[in-house]
Amino acid sequence: MLGLDPSIVKHFLPLDTEKFLPKRQHLWRQRADLLLHIKEKVVKQIDARFLEVCNYSERVANIVPVEKKNGNVRVCIDYRFLNKASLKDNFPLPHIDILVDNTARHTQFSFMDGFFGYNQIQMAEEDKVKTTFITTTFITMWGTFCYKVMPFGLKNAGATYQRAMVTLFHDMMHKVIKVYVDDMIAKSKEGEDHLINANHSSAYFAKMQWSKGMTSVRKLLIQSRHIWFSRRCWSHLHRIVLSFYT
Picture (cartoon, rainbow, N blue to C red):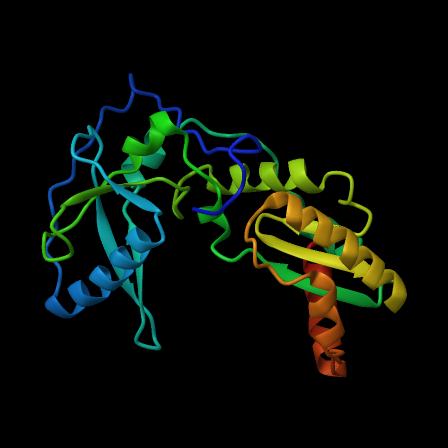
């Protein structure tokens, strides 16, 4: 399983066990057509080695399928009880308005989004069992699974991811890149500088070890096209910036 080196970051789940007792949810009923979507998603995560079978857990959550307008189904886990018991991670997230202001007078931008970014961070071994969720045996021959990687929906997942990004990119942040959780922007004032910054970013991506077959950022930039904003678009962007100050 590829992902961030555990020596860089792992996700921990410290809980207030005195105030919040463990909660085992009983298996909810699901529509037959939704079960097919759930099975597809769960099997996909098993094949990606994101999940492992977990037979004994004091905390068990249900799957919550969310139907989208395009007909797809997002498979979520009901971690409400787990999140209530989780202690708050106070690692700060950047102020979006400051990030926007710091891009002023720059002409070259590359926007990057972490692909299944949260799932690139491993769970602490002792906390895997706390992420246990239940499925019908129609899905697989096993009924309960827990996450080996950090899933979406956990209370402190954003803070853990931001901490990882600061650890990896601290000497590039506030200079050539901006990071807000799993969204990154490489910025430059000139085209040639942008390629230099991209090469520096490529070296950091190699250190992150997300994927051995990752295409270099420089190649992506060479293939990219200029983006032109209409006057109407600039007007809306200006309104967004002003809204941060009102």
